[in-house]
Length: 94
Image 1 (cartoon, rainbow, N blue to C red):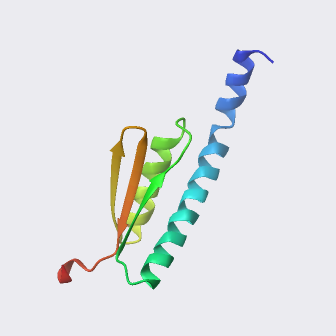
Image 2 (cartoon, rainbow, N blue to C red):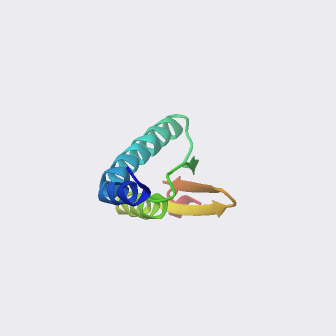
Image 3 (cartoon, rainbow, N blue to C red):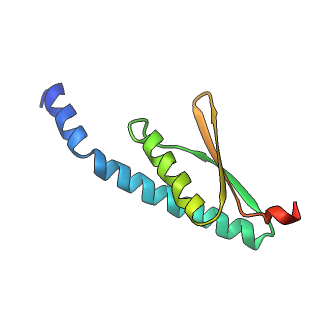
């Protein structure tokens, strides 16, 4: 297989790459939220490790997903690292 063929296959399977990384990220963050809330915390901050080809799209959809559920979501971009913070603190009590 030459590079052009490999690129074509990669682009054709981009949806699968997005879906698998989105589901994995949501599962990871759900576990972190569950654990943090059981410990009495009102937020989690996690580093994100995603393939660059889908990173922006996955992060955008993760933010949308949690905002629809009522969470406050912030994304922090550092050199070679992206972190996401999800908070469920009652804003009236802060």
